[in-house]
Amino acid sequence: NVMSAFSDTIAGKAVVIDNPVILAKVNKDGKPNWNIAKVPQKKSGTSEAKEPGKFNIGMERFEIKNAVVAFTDNQNRMSANIKGLNFLMKGGLTQDFSNIDVNTSVEQITVISKAENANMTAIIKNQNITINGEVSQNSVDLDIAATSGNIDVTFAKVKYLKNTKIEIKAGVAMDVPKMKFTFKENEVKVNQLALGFAGDVQVMDKDLKLDV
Image (tube, rainbow, N blue to C red; front, top):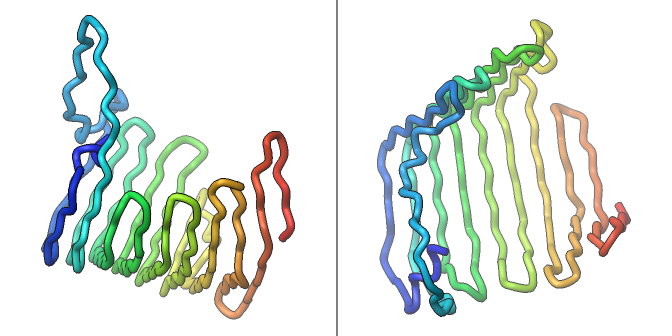
């Protein structure tokens, strides 16, 4: 539990990561190159469990500028490349309550799969996502907007999408103790086709209650 290390307030103006290049790989045996953590050794005897301390992070912004991410999965014969990733998050983060103000943009995402029965190429250009709202231990209230400039998808040599534009406007609220999700006048637009939906979804003990 990383957050248990934070017992007091941590404050700072900003954290900015400029032009990072991230290379992630999974070899043919399924082992990722980012799995570098040591396996903790079991200690004999018993020790008292420590209660995690509360954390409070006050920061004006966390920003990633013009990132490049390359992912290769040699076991499943697929790859994904992200070019021109920009991420900006503003607001404070505490254990009890958080304000969320996130803006993300991506110049291009390319996904290629050469797996058996799953030969696919997908290219997404000019992706933009904004998320604003509040998160606490008992509730979540978020407004989400996403746009994609052009989407091309080819599967088994058949082109399913070409120069497709998608816009999403969504409002999502969650009552955590009741496990109830509320969708507020959501709209999905594919080129000129607009689809809207609203309603509630609640997870019961043995059932799923839908009113959409």
